[in-house]
Length: 226
Image (cartoon, rainbow, N blue to C red; front, side, top):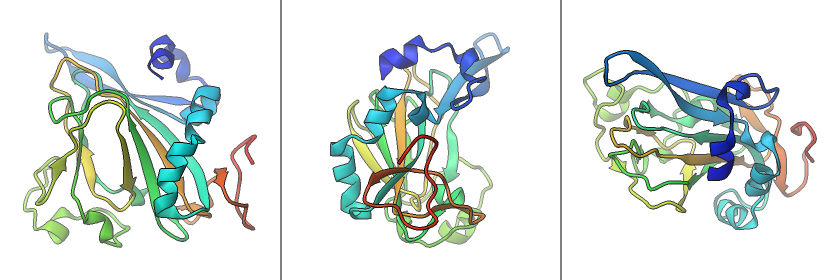
């Protein structure tokens, strides 16, 4: 994966039919604005490497413990976060996708050691038990009195772990990250899995790839996928 990432011409990725690239604009040491890479989306469609990883039997065995034997793969993204890469405010992924029935799981493969210093993941354990689907309201849910999107939340924990760790993150789990203040990058790969009939919050069926099980009426396959 690292070799693939190092070989990419990120300017060209912006013009791909399938994969896209996101940037952050930050201030450099001289105070001038510079552009740093943030994430690559739809890696699943980029070739055999990520296709095979999405269907890795060991990863699917882990996911199946939560979803059961019917598994659909629908989403892939690599978060790059180089030095100075910006953090991500508190959020729940359920704001973007719905599912019938739940749960939706992000299988996070940690590609480089992750810590608070390099902008690692932070979560609020137990927050996945909520059924909130609308806009996040930290004041209502946690008694937060500030509008700061990176403010401390009661019960938050930083996920400090070495490269090679696999994390299963429920879409209802509140999470975010800090800015990377270190001199080291912090790359993670996020693979989205769900039970059948993955939908957007607008009720549209999301095209997906059949990882395990059989297609149901009304399901939509990704281009070229079963």
